[in-house]
Image (cartoon, rainbow, N blue to C red; front, side):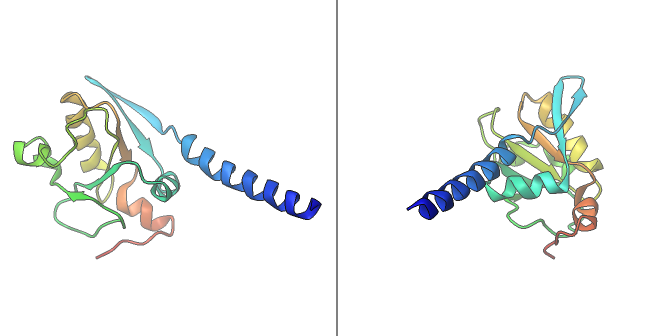
Length: 140
């Protein structure tokens, strides 16, 4: 009985630790003229993908591959076009994570979405380049 209780406690502690790791990701706040968005590292994105509660958007042009579980591909310079905005959640508080090849196009897109009133925008700092350098794969 004591072994069962010990094993149950270890499992509970492990599950709690994994859940709190996702909840602890706060990102680095990047201020813009109209608000802010958050930069995250590849490791943070990898952790967040385990309990995905966001829309993952590739904004790189031309197409250079996707991170697994990407939901949308929208060109960074057309993110605010009505046909592209209609693909994004209407709830301006919905969590949206953007990425591109190096992080620059997605930062531009993040600033644009913030200017349109979106309040929960995240950006993969360093983009797919940083993702691959951290040992994660890109789907071609």
